[in-house]
Length: 310
Image (cartoon, rainbow, N blue to C red; front, side, top):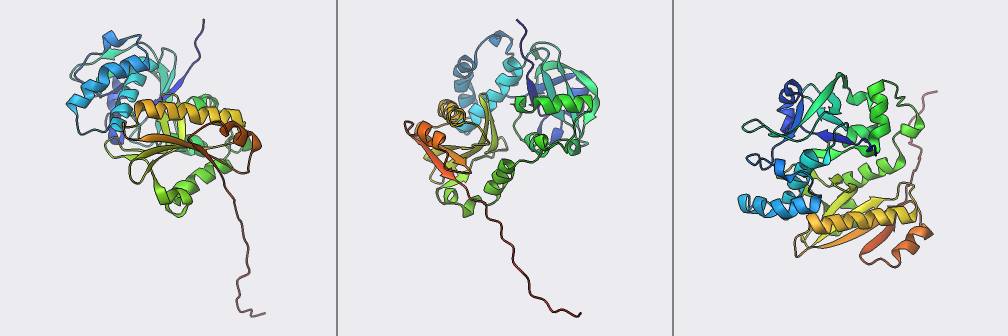
């Protein structure tokens, strides 16, 4: 059975410090638990992997929060277990371009080397330019996560590798929901959400809650209550059916509860749509801990008085 090609981004350290290491070795890598050869972990599922290494990382780095440990181990699992031979991988370079290639083999442990948990890569000769990307993809690759999934952008990435993407195509354009997401983040403290919540930030990993990557997908916004007692998954409807968006919120909430939430923290969800969608309301009517909000876009024009000289 042929597996579906998946798409990944692996960051060569902060500020692309190890980009030349990636290119010269024809590998990508990650550094968490860098003194441990993880070859014997092959074939473990994510839950088993987290169960095995979460206590180890907690003992080694007790100052890390559970959230930070979960992020680190999730990224480590992506590189050591999640990526398969034939998958597409991208990585940022110090010159501002993006290297892209294909995973060429299984896990390798490079003891004593930077980011020692490695996967071999056949790099394309072509480099991608952020200016050629749609705003959605350009924004996605800004994530500070060490390793994350880009499957939702597979068509665009394939087109860019083939040099045939027309960024003027409205189907690839900057959609209203994306404007809304950025506006929501930029004006967070002025919204009702900002009274009780703030956008999640993990200072250790340099990760923020907008477009928050998980092993089960990307959360539009992950927020935390100002008293630290609650994590909230916020999803924009983005044209999906009520069943789809509610199912996605619940899946994300389950992942957050399992991997990020501290014992004292509750996990809730919020769906934001442009109108009072009856299907969403119906789907949520039997779901506890998930709220529903609508947004209103207002556009005003007004004359500005000025003195005429004609």
